Amino acid sequence: MKRIIGWLKNLFSSSKRHESLFGKMIYMLASTREEELNCAQVYALLEQFSEAVLRHEPLTDLMMSIEQHLNVCPDCREEYETLLAMMKAA
Amino acid sequence: MMNRDNAAWVNDLKDVGPNREAALDDLDAELKPALRRGISRWLSTSHPEFDDLVKDVGQETLMRVLKQLDTFEGKGQFTNWVYKIAVRLALNELRRRKWRNVSLDYLQENSEEGGASFQFPAADPLPETNMQRRQAMAELQRAINEELTSRQRAVMLAVIIQGVPMEEVARKLGSNRNAVYKMLHDARRRLKTRLEEAGLSPSELLAMFE
Image 1 (cartoon, each protein chain N blue to C red):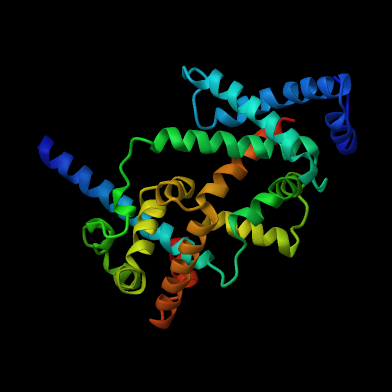
Image 2: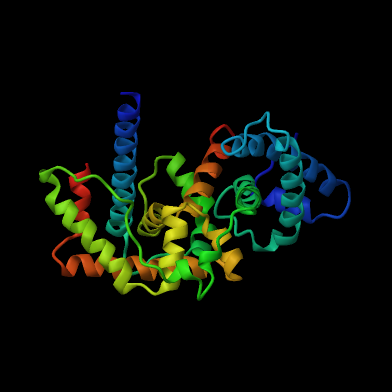
């Protein structure tokens, strides 16, 4: 019985992983644009973007391009979230 | 601690003499607690390497700030610009440490895995209601195998599936992050077009997940 439960658990978790991987890829493809800023362009504007977000300013087109990049670029997303954490308490 | 606006920070740090020393001390005092907050997102504050990392990144950041002072455009707050430099240094160091012992041989050209075909992890059958999603998954799998070069496929596998930072992929490939990003962007565009041509719009598929 224990083995069956273990097997079911594995099946369930592998199915969940599978779903989330596919979901993640679909999210990235849905967020993909013909033209995107690259990481260097985003880095150059990252503190400005973060300040605008913290001030709840409406985002300009340029800032929206940064947001789009952050949706498809895990490295820049990590850096943005870390920067935000550093700025918030300041 | 003195309250400085952007111009005062830059002027004082460019100064030779006591102003610069005072500004560096003040900047260090601002940076350290922020850096501790930032790094604690990735490394527990009780980790034996935590304090050294904060110290090393802090020192390196101040050195870079002095070197790059002329590139500060003043569009945001000076201290936030400094934090940004620290974030890049800290995260790249953490990425290097995390992935240094992980073999990513499949990224190398001509490696067997790099040329191998991509398959979503074997899944149990999904309910009937997810027919369109199953069709999309099969199409996406085919597209990854048919539309992408083996290098693109390997990089996508590393970044999106294995979660390897692009910065580390770039290091292993002797490339840079922008180039890796471009490779992935090209790959995403191809896959998106292919799904759309098959009548499977990623945006509509996404709506089904929500």
